[in-house]
Image (cartoon, rainbow, N blue to C red; front, side, top):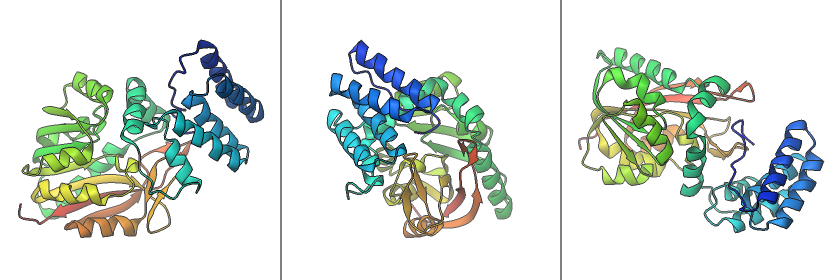
Length: 314
């Protein structure tokens, strides 16, 4: 479970829902065995209750019962084919299936729709999130090195959420466009009046449809942690950057060279992988530094802040 807590989708049965919340209370008190027993009862009462199955899987794993966790996550995915809980990712992480890890669109949308109302507070106060400030510092450093002021014409904020990065970069943008998969997140961003335009769309779909656009700066603050393979993002992204345009983003990282699915159901990208994916898309790394944009359970999460340059004539 992440610090934001498990996703909840009602079973439609008030008794089952009540038992589920009692089980969460037992987890909070450290009574994992008791929670597992109550969750099993809840799932038996409401076999289609994906949230109960998913949480049972998490609890079983914490108890060291891998087989029980795999069985519960399998039931969670069967109960909700859209996989709003992310059970398929858990099965990949546990080595129970060999399919390439990819987050379902329904999972990502549901995740952020559910947290939109408390997202800013959760990130800035509980997770000590400072991704936008780190990105701005990196971009300003690069622009100083290039001998230019940090001013941009068209700026695209991918996975803009409620507009935390948009607020930081608004003074440096002539025109600011935000894109996010979550309607609830976009609604919060629109309330702030930060963006000149906002779009509800999957990142890949938006980039592929915007092939004739020319952005001077593209931001991706803590959004690539929800993308395993960055190549399908970088390729169309490189095409919409104006010559001399910048891509600035943060990712979580690990000691290896490839991509790793973490227990938090976020992806960590190795430095070698990031450099290779950018180079393959024709983007040149100008700045890459180790950093931490957030904490998990009070511990700083290892990350990278990257600024890459496009020389491509579009």
